[in-house]
Image 1 (tube, rainbow, N blue to C red):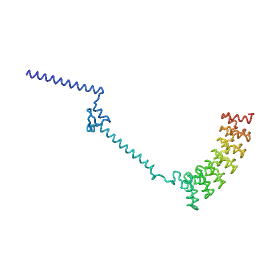
Image 2: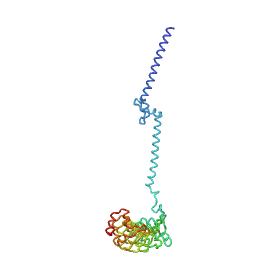
Image 3: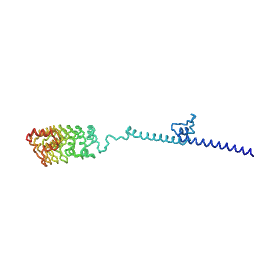
Image 4: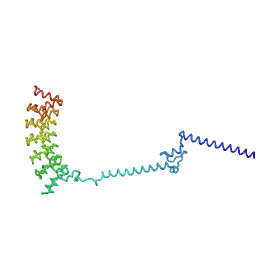
Length: 350
């Protein structure tokens, strides 16, 4: 019994010793894990670039497929490929639309403006197409065709005049009466006015050849084509219109301003000279504020125009507006020192 007990004692001591070693190993493993040294196998399995390579360097693709992190990466990669494929399909559709001619609008499409076929031909200056359309129409149909307005209120003649197609305009004038030629668009311009605005001298020449009375037409603000051309600085158009009817110089807009007022304010020197040569007295015309073209020139800071307006009659500098201000007063208030020097030259007693 003593031997058995001693034997049992020694066995128990060994077991306890073994348990101690096991416990120490577990503690050591926890310490290593805590110190940031993870299991290399697990790290490599989670890494996307790892394709089933074990610590020994052997491949274990089956093992990797079973691992949750690998399945997640693989699933995500497949989803990425599917998105790429769908993206290519979407991108190819508009490209095929651009390249193909199936969905392209035909050249005679009305577009956003609601243009008719003759509008389109007139706008692009397609004279042969305009001839074809006119020849295939007759009587009342032809009159209606040429008087047709698009969504902007533009007639075919307007479209041709705006874009400077004198040949198309000349052809249409063979079939158009004065009433149709005077139809204004929604912007208030008729074909004659819009040609003046754009500076299309050849178009204006064609229109005046057939309908010289167009030169006196005005818009809702009583603006003539001469006003419009002068505002834009088209000196050749201004001279053409003045040769047609010099009385245009005297016509004032609803605000009382003549063409000379406008040209002086805008700084168009050559136009001011041309207007004064036709009628020097217009320098004394006042607008609804009581201001002359000289008042306008002082505001516009153009010294040369101030000199031109003083040449015909320097007493124009004494004209007072509705507030009692002369052009000299305006120059002082605006701080126009160079203009003031010219006033003193023309009138040293100031």
